[in-house]
Amino acid sequence: MKNCVIWTRVSTKHQEDNGASLSDQKTKCELYARQNGFVIKGYFGGKHESAKTPGPMLKEMYESIKKNKKITHLLVPAIDRFSRNVAQGAMIVSKLKQLNVIIVDVSSGVDSSTNEGRMMIHIKLGLAEWDNGNRTDKFVSGRKHCLESGVYCGAAKPLGYDKHGKSLGTYFTVNDKGHLIRKAFKWKLQGYANCEILKKLSDYGLTMRKQKLHHILTNPFYAGKIRHKMLQGRLVDGNQPKLVSYEDFLRVQDILGGRTGVYKHKKETPRFPLKRHILCSKDKTPFTAYTVKKKNIDYYKCNQSGCKTNVSAKKLHERYECLLRFFNVAECLKPLLRDIISKMIISNDDEARSMETLLKKQKSEYIGKLKKCKVRFGMGEIDEEIYEMTNKDLQEKLDNIERGLAECRKNLSNLDGEVDDILAMCCKLDSLWRDGSLETCQKLQNLLFPNGILWDKEKDNYRTFDENEALSIIARLSVNYKNKKEENSFEFSSFVSSCA
Image (tube, rainbow, N blue to C red):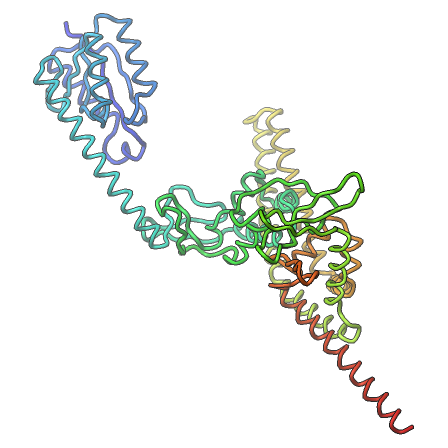
């Protein structure tokens, strides 16, 4: 009697769905066994497992053969079901030969009992490896062509997008989560800490870990770019809709900890609000801060090698306050500014109403989930413990959504109060910065000078660049009005003197 075991395998479910089914392999082996007088003693494999490296299924078969010394043959539908690599396949053939087991390829009848048979098996393994290499080359070439054409066709789609089409026909649309991610970038530009952004996203129904948020904020995909190892470090313009402009994306990278986009956890103290906001005018290196403990005096300094810029914190803070006074709004411009702010807020109402609609939709979904949970509990489909846990989780998310809706309604209904708050802030920027918390100071700094401010050691003063355009215009109007008023006053005084 010839005792045998049968081995079947497919690498992926995709292979099974496209004709390489496990049941078909099993049927062919069983037919061969009946026709050739084999007694089947067991089945192995029968699952999705890669042929690149020996997996647990092969080890399981080895152990079973070692225990049953009567097994003499191993039937496989085709030799590449074991391996598609010559060295890997040769090792398996050698291992089975040590166990006195003959491999039979039922598709051709070739077996490993003779030198000729083993040679044919090795040839088949070589052809399978060659075929694998060809497929890989074609796949890599096709994927690289798609990426270079601006089409991201990876299996995983970035959070916030829905993926449609295949290969070069792939395109993306922004979903509800994408609109929230757009707000996350905006909040980061406004100076919010990551923990605050996570809390605000959670209030809107989008919960994620801090690592996921950092990955999103540093992923250029959301700025319309594609980054992939096949592109060898190059960024290409993608066809996906942008959630943030590339310029703002780069500003976010600066905020996160440098132009590389690598996040650096640094301890912040209220004594040094300008740390990393002030840049050395010579080399654009952000200033760090330290304290001379013996004298208890604070300093800012440039850490660039060879640069000896070192300034007391007291001086830099006083000069910064003086600079902010330049941006304070003159009394005469308040009516004009009030009108501008009102129009800006009204134009932003569309976004608030869109967010309100999104939250209402989410609220409806969670109410539906709560009802289904109660029905399933009532019908006995889930036990009380699972019901309590699920109900609590859904209710917490629903409460967060309710808070978000309340905030939206407050923003939409409190136009006059919001205008007054913004106007008051614009009229006293220096005192707001001087008396504010670290968070307030940094938000104000990022608003006025999003890319930082330069300290000129030679001039012993600040140099601005990339100012907030709106506030810069208001400041120039205030200065022009003040100069005009002084000029008119001087002309009137000269006229009175001449008359006397």
